[in-house]
Amino acid sequence: MNYWLVKSEPSTYPWDQLVKEKEGMWDGVRNYAARNNLMAMKKGDQVLFYHSNEGKEVVGLAEVSKEHYPDPTAKEGDWVVVNVVPVEKFPKTVTLAQIKGDSRLKEMALVKLSRLSVSPVRREEFDIIVGLAHD
DNA sequence: GCCAACGTTGGC
DNA sequence: GCCAACGTTGGC
Image 1 (cartoon, rainbow, N blue to C red):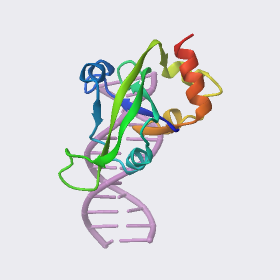
Image 2 (image 1 turned 120 degrees about the horizontal axis):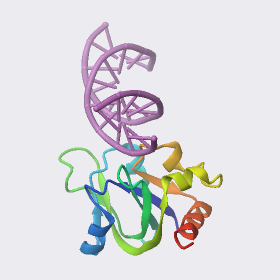
Image 3 (image 1 turned 45 degrees about the horizontal axis):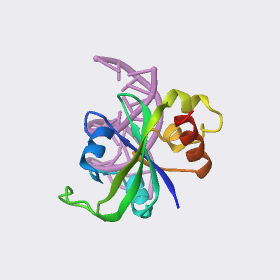
Image 4 (image 1 turned 90 degrees about the vertical axis):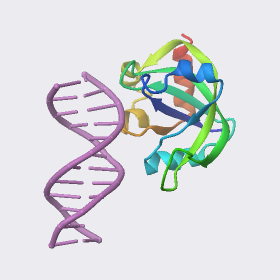
């Protein structure tokens, strides 16, 4: 079981849309590091859903429902998508400011590699964030 | 809206 | 293959 964090701009694909659709295809990734992470995702992996730009907070938990397959929106190149399903909307969102202010979370890729849209999360980090979300 | 970080492109 | 220029992302 692995843990991930994906970023989406609420104006493009907010959490509520994933809930409405029941299952979302995570398309449009055009970055090699992010793609490699998508390809490493396994069915059942837990995925933190982060709103970038507006909100700047982790809003919910999703789960990989289908492992990587070719991105139908890619006209050229070897890009992939995964499918995710919503698991839980967090009772309390976890803001970027909270994450930056927590010494245990300072090493997160979210903080260190702020432009990476799909990043791995360590088990400990995942547990801490889920804990904060239910505080 | 600005700017820093960083990935990508293209000239040499 | 190096590196400058440029584009994009995302925090502020």
